[in-house]
Length: 228
Image 1 (tube, rainbow, N blue to C red):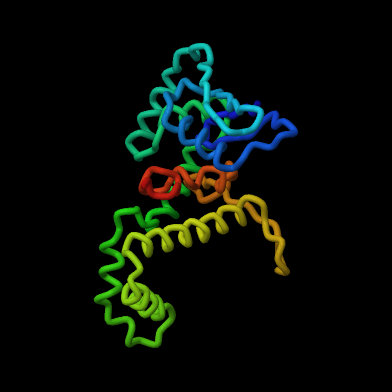
Image 2 (cartoon, one colour; image 1 turned 120 degrees about the vertical axis):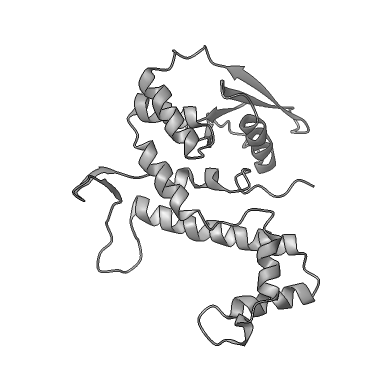
């Protein structure tokens, strides 16, 4: 049996893994079910037959939480107006756990503004009609590459999927570098991201960014493959 924990960041954590490791596809299936469940469902169990032929998820709701305080309710509205998914969870985490969630949310939203949604085939169309292909400037090869893929029969949706994953990997690298520093050969290898006050002085740190980046997928499905 494997226990799945549905965290405040809407990530899935693997706990108490038995010696018989669970298959990746089983974990992904359980993740999707948890992500579509009511927010009061925090724990679930993955049960497998002795031969691993069947898998199902049984969700276990936690006891009803304490009523939200006025501070949590007010902060929830701030997150909701800013477009946060599950604004209550962000607000509760900041108030109850002391995490700087409003700053984390603001930074992640800012850097993911240009992340393409799944429906962005118009972006591909724009590359097909762009005149940048005749340019020799930096990045001009993008238009040529897109035009070549389309000419060889690659679907517009597949091109969008490719670009979206590349965008995520670039953003994730930035977030992880800010979170854990740099292991490459650079003169300086330690730094941090801070919130600043009205005088521009650093106050609280903004960290663990890479843990929540998937929540900012503009398609709202945390970069899972398109449903067939």
